[in-house]
Length: 113
Length: 110
Image 1 (cartoon, one colour):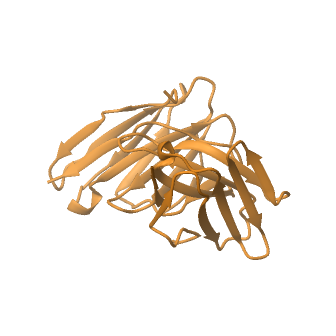
Image 2: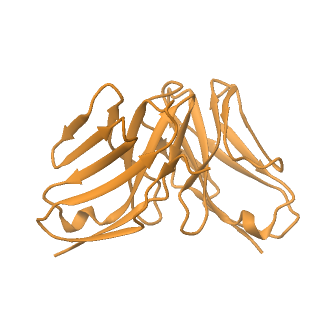
């Protein structure tokens, strides 16, 4: 158990809909990272938050947004969903803001039908 | 955005032999490198890391080598065991983000 909790584990929705994925980092961790893994693809970096502030942005679509709350949990919002958004979304956390190992949750499997 | 590349999607080795997984990166700003291991239905778990000030780091059966001039790193597993069968991701860190390669599926045959 990494200590990182992601909910829900599975999500099935339709095109055009909006969903929210939730991540609770390990106790004491200030950084939260979001990644997308499509079928047979690597982990695509989406966004990094540190102590409530956005630190870095990767290949995140404009239809996607994220935030980190004062209690350090994070949410990834995906809107106007398309079939191609179907993927496994991972959240990871770390103590500080870089150059250290990340602890990953077990992911949210999103299926857009 | 292929800043980190793992060109071998899969690798198969015999139990007891050496497994060598390779990774290349393009961004000179990366200064910390990691390997993660992933089993199905689980998130990746950290395996070993190396700072850019070193060229080798060893942890038991696992050794990571870094060649900064070639922007290349490799993971050696000796001896390989069937329990090592998993997908291995290379990662590079710098500028507040961490980028991952596409992964290499390692199969260790008994």
